[in-house]
Image 1 (cartoon, rainbow, N blue to C red):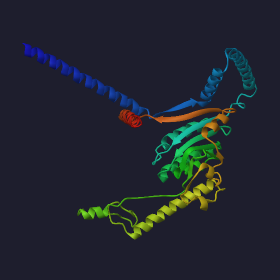
Image 2 (image 1 turned 180 degrees about the vertical axis):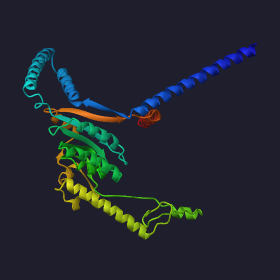
Image 3 (image 1 turned 90 degrees about the vertical axis):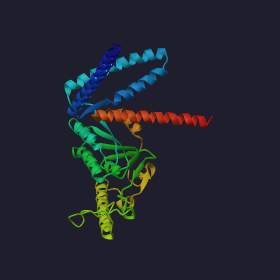
Image 4 (image 1 turned 45 degrees about the vertical axis):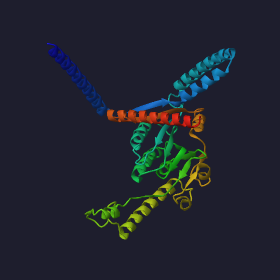
Length: 349
């Protein structure tokens, strides 16, 4: 009897465990199904409100109680006067006195420029409401990457220019190669003093394992139709004809890049700056690669005086596996940083 009791208890635990696992799997499947139906979300963040709230909070902390009370009265009076003015203008000219908007977009580009998918959605959303009195402000950070990816990103920015919407691009850290291809589309480029600008050149590199394969008696075969279907290969034996063709293709891409930059910034001495070199912001302004030395923060603070600033951000829905993977990666990174900091603190004691 005791054996049967223990066996029944074990069976009950096993059934409970199986049911729990099935319930978790059903929840995961349901969550995944919802994600498939929703590709992403467009988020609008009121940056003017954030700036004004910060300014108000700091100001109030610096005032005495008497000064603060007086300020609240003044603010209340000013708000009523402003609301009255807005109502009068709305009745007289309903649409002509709308506050100009500054639409802020962040673009932090990777090698393959996959972020262009979100950029496309953000620009499409802005184009649906923006006028030529508004402005789009892009905080750009990219060291470049694949030609076709950054070519598409630049084309997305061109959509704004085609609709006569002023475009300003800010570079706080780096806009090089494909990053500068995007930047040069703007009406105005502002850059931080030590930001990296330029690198108008083309590079391609490919390892070749042919000698290693031969050393281990491994044969590699590659069949193509068309003389230049494949010029250089990683595993076959490359020849001078293939190398020359590959160089020719690189030079053609470079010429297209130079033409694109010249078309958008005709004031540049393209032969002088299209050498693949990069410059810091303070040097880049002397070469006309940028127009103003300034950080994005200062530009937005100045713009907030006369315009309303909003950030437009499109975020793609992530799969559950991606979320779990990111959580694990962040946990590992946090643990490693904590361990490093502990070891460093021990070293300096």
